[in-house]
Length: 80
Image (cartoon, rainbow, N blue to C red):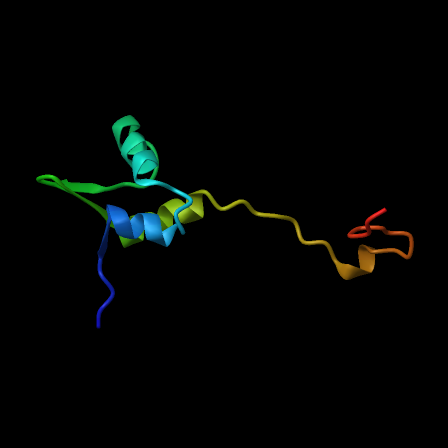
């Protein structure tokens, strides 16, 4: 089975594990923010490649900390 080129509104909500609601996506579309979409008649479709691009644009990079920088006095993760 081939991977679809577009996702429906419901599939986009599922892709983001219900952390983005249909209402949020509707609001973003009206403000022209969020992932790009295609409207054909009443159908709203999200190109998968655009969702991937949007994901990358929202990726927050963290600096890696080498294990050598942890000293004997580091208390990271300890609870008092």
